[in-house]
Image (tube, rainbow, N blue to C red; front, top):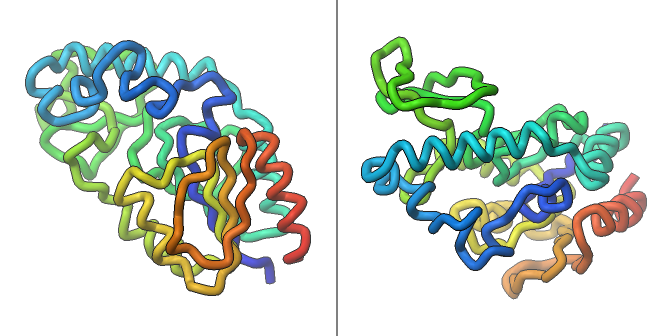
Length: 229
């Protein structure tokens, strides 16, 4: 039986693929205040601005390629039962070959009606004002914005509870509820944190810190995981 490796990833793992992070831009993303483009209030005030912003993000993700960190995690499925919980809206984990990926904050290549969050539709091009779902509602990106509930958090908690090994890669552990997932990992489970700047987590037990960019750090993580085969 393969050991279950649960991996929580954040923006830092996709940064090396050229996708910008909030952390590296002082709360601005491509010159936008995040609440202008990632909140229900922003959507109500200027839906066209929000659509334009995510249309650009969709083009950026389409052009980006999985980096070594994504590929190493996919390859780890040969030896471990790997479950990835990602805060990222891109599909780089899937394109790298990972087969069990849970997106906490939505997916850039999906859209949904403003009237029903439970039915999604694929989208590769732009969403325009006036584009309607079959229920008549305006289509919006399938993204969890600030001040919105995170529907997938309960499923993610259940995955975290089953971890036999747990890794955090490229996330500051300050965005909740995602950051709280580490508290559901069984106490004695070996935990690994990979980041350029290791976040402070004084309450965590049995933690190995790997202070490095994602690709370098995930290779080091792979080497350390060999001890658990």
